[in-house]
Image 1 (cartoon, rainbow, N blue to C red):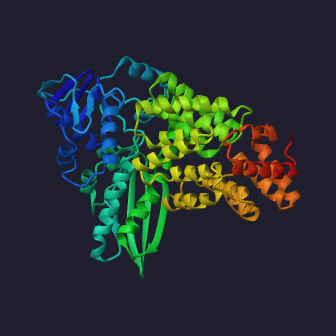
Image 2 (cartoon, rainbow, N blue to C red):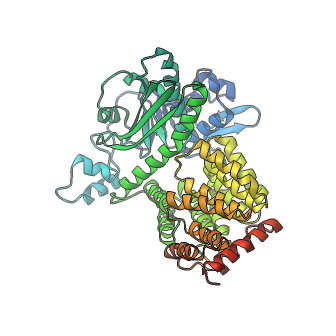
Image 3 (cartoon, rainbow, N blue to C red):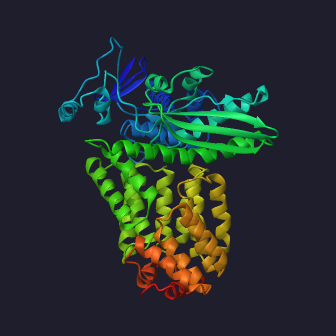
Length: 545
């Protein structure tokens, strides 16, 4: 059966969703959800109906259900705000409200090329017209759509312990990691049922990539050593078989359920960051990058550094993405993040203007994706830096209600406690972020937050320790160097303080005490007292007025 609505076609036999002639990549679960809603479009479908039909009655949180509904809406150009095709009726359920035409599938149609595709093919220079080159610039090859940029299959983990009692633990790891990765709205994850067909088989990952049309494969194994379990994972490029990333965990084999939860939470975010970095590297080689390609490149810039050059490059990439697609949530979130970083890192003399623009972008992103936890954290950070700390913390807490493993939200709440004059509480929030994601791309930020809190508490020696750790994790965060200079200056270690300030000026030459004091982050008296103390430490380190 084929269901036609607007310019979309849902083919239930081929299990494909098309927009015009273009095949769209969606997860099997989202496909099932769309098919069920369309087949039952004459009635309101309850939450229990969806869980029974799509999840086979398994326990599903409201946040997970909302995430899948939003993914279904995004796939067909709808949004939580418009609800043009999928409408939510309060306390009742959801209903597919678009007009639908049903047709029988008669034949397999060839993959049609549009004029844009022909233009891209002409752009390939002589001697570079291989299938690989065509795919690199985004052209479908051999009649099949190219894999989604962020696409992955989590293969069933292998139990190498020799003890069949761990089979349930191994299966749980595979299923939980697949579920957690599916929470990322821009990540296409193959359903666990499809992945299970490869269990126990020796198959080339490149063949798996072709079979499932994904760019990445994650493999894992579990071993036992005495009373400890070791979990190994590796991320592989399915196009060339190269290993992109590997990680190992070793923990006491005490409570397997808690261990599974800890390992999955520690894997999901670093793995997503690695996929974004890989997509950015691939996008750099494209002749005609689209909006998503540009968003990946911009995100990769911000992963590396918060310097004026890196932030300016990211801004340019996000602006180009919005010119191509003004409704790109990733690009809108990126622009919000840029304005937030400029103010947070004290890269400009007027942080208020950057924060005002950032707030506009964050609100627009949330109007298109109201349950995107990252955008809620970005808006929360903007509130924190504009003397709306209570609202900022509330946004971060709401983000955690959408994704309980969102470590960045805990880090931001910790910074908010500094602005509230309660810096002693920051450490608990930062340590929770570390617990959830100790190998996160943002650990250097959290260490900086905690170093800042220690400065506000006049615990200068501890501040030095945390700020040095932040710099060791990433030397490209300018304020970490200046705050380290302040801590060293307050301790009377003036030579070291001046050296730290010099490192900061190498990253942000325009930094001054005036710029430091321009950020009106809070009017709390305890916070302001701490700011004056930090300012004096910087002055001792040679930071100019």
